[in-house]
Image (cartoon, rainbow, N blue to C red):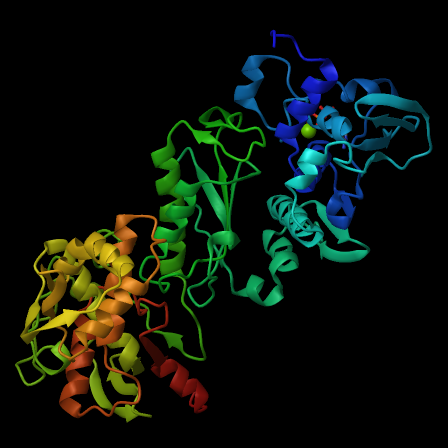
Length: 575
Ligand code: ADP
Ligand code: MG
């Protein structure tokens, strides 16, 4: 074949494929146009996943009758003139590709009226104008798209079921509704209303429309990050709410929904120690940056952006999420004990993002590996002002909660969560110092491992060793010679099998080793329902006092709840 320039119709069909690979992309482009046009209401209707019909109606500024045809020409845009404008972009659109791409792949009718003008309509099919002329219309623009991709069977082949395509449209609409809470969005599919946001401008109200009022109420406001040039706002879930996948972590950069592995990891890492492995937060994170700091022009669907300073963007997000989490107090009836922050707002450990403990003494090994309850009281840790107060143990409730008295009231300590938290932070410190407390097994224990488990084992051998597991390969078999010295005897085989069963999904090395610490701590911690004697309870409470962690176990449950003297007085009507 000789080289030839493609017919315009062929070229534009190919280009259209880039922009609108499925119905959700058409909806996204049309709603973005509505938002760029200053709409305060956008109504979206689809039928059969958008393949039969898509209709988007807005009350924005509209298009002048004389511009209707131009709007459907390739590279026709009112949003950008020079290349420099790209650096100061404030609109979602800028390439002038959406309308021509949609018209190349479907039958399109657009009616429009500007507030003080006459209404007009235009109809196109396969990129050519079928008709145009005056038409009655409310102010704004209404676009109807029918028989999408019917002339492009190759494209249809790649689409999923109607239900799946509807789901994708819904996700795209939700993203826009969350990013623009000032726009009232109503979305229906096959006659059924699936989403309706009030448009009053409150992000939490838009969130409630998407995720339900109950979760919306529980969501935490992101602490505005002061790290210029990035401004981070949004809503994040408290540790008590989580999802089994990352789908509910939504990221926006300058009002544009983006997919970013790095920023998603920034959010996830901020939850380190607060969520169980394999659980992910629900988050709407809005990052605002001066337009010249962000390149939105790197992806055909503008689904990805590039930052001039990626590292700063990452740490702004991580810091903001982490600070909001640490500031939040999961309130039951009583307040969970909140470790007072050091004057600069940092955790007792100097840096909230690493869990190094500088000054707290390692207790000698005794009951449950908790330190010697009979020994003389240990000196308060160096950062005494930042530690949990000394508590006097009074007893145990339901073989699960330790009742204690502190300077400011009564404390209930969840024995499993508290022990787990103590062990978790101790394990992390040992890992960081690479000096695990090990317990040698009297007889090496053989490990049964499938080839797949052996592969995982090999990949994790170094982390396992840094936690105190001595594992060797010996003539084709694996032998465990030592385990972490955690006091309570656990079945090494069961624990290791569990550590190997966990998914490989951990995105970073850092997260992988924390997840491992969390599993070991959970296995080794005292169970709920176990009776403890006074000495054991005292040892646990003292260890908790000296532990540097936040007042949650690694799964995010509180370790202690406080009923202040003031609360008791109120409850008993003394004040
Ligand atoms: P872009 O959004 O990149 O400019 P489009 O092909 O999506 O390109 O739209 C072309 C032009 O048509 C826009 O620049 C805008 O001037 C006009 N337009 C499209 N949709 C609307 C709308 N809903 N309201 C007002 N103007 C619109
Ligand atoms: Mg556009």
